[in-house]
Amino acid sequence: MILSCVTGQEHKRICGFLLGLIVDLLVPGGLDLSCVVKAACALLDLLFLAQFQCHTSDTLSRLEGSLAAFHQNKAVFVDLGIQEDFNIPKLHGLVHYALSIRLFGTTDNYNTEQSERLHINLAKNTYHATNRKDEYSQMTMWLERCKKIQQHNASIDWRQSHWQNIQTQTLIGPLHVHAQSIKIAQKPSSKAVPFTVIFWKYGMPLFQDALGNFIAGVNNPGLRTHALHLCGGNTLLPFRTVRIYHNIKFTAANDAQVSGIIDAVHVWLEQKDKRGRIIPVRFDTVLIWGSGQGESLLHPH
Image 1 (cartoon, one colour):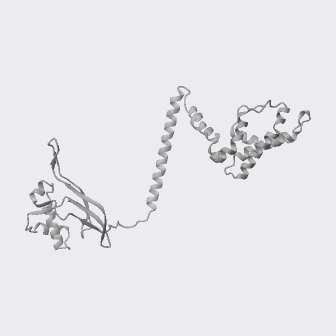
Image 2 (cartoon, helix red, strand yellow; image 1 turned 60 degrees about the vertical axis):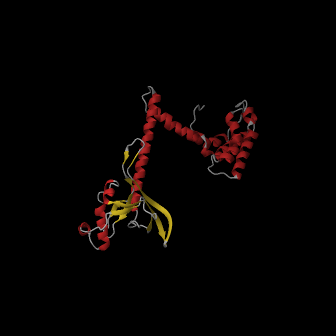
Image 3 (cartoon, helix red, strand yellow; image 1 turned 90 degrees about the vertical axis):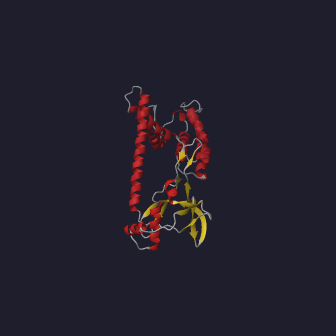
């Protein structure tokens, strides 16, 4: 019986009982059976050694020795008329096994089993999913949809595991704001700027009210929000102009030593571009923790 197409699993099963079939085989012509057994045993040893997932210099030496033993006894197949010569590419490829393992690692990294498995998943199963008409476009679409499903499932698994990790995390309390210092220039960007200019040019219509609330808060630290606004509205401001700084830097303070600028805020006044179009005033925003009020405010400078 001749097997025209042998799968990898069938080949492995044949190797498992092949030696038992030939050990008591009757050889015609009075030829020595031991050469047949030695050649088959050496070839089987080589195949099993080549499939090792870990190799040493001893196993590679045994692999080369098995190949040498096969070549010493292979002439018996020519004497029996089974084979005319041994100009077979696969037999020649066995010469390179030991060198390839030394250069590229064990054969399970680059053998044909991986490509055969991909042929089943990417060709055979894909073709069976078509109606056998214009199959190429259908196979391409089927593979694309399978890839999208895999990516979607991976995304769902990641989100579920990420959510479980968030639920199992312990609370570490509120964020701790490290001490910071404000660094400004010795001279202001603008001196004696009237409140009306701040209203129109800087776009801050509530500046005067905010300044009154700030002064009331400094003078009366225990006031709550509603009382603070009432007191701020009744605060008399003996001046109508203030100094303006267009650039303020925040530095990290460590043991009364300022080290490194960690943030900065800027103000850009209203101006005109080359075509005479007005560019409105722009300013950065600073997050401030309200003193004694337990709230955070966005305060422009």
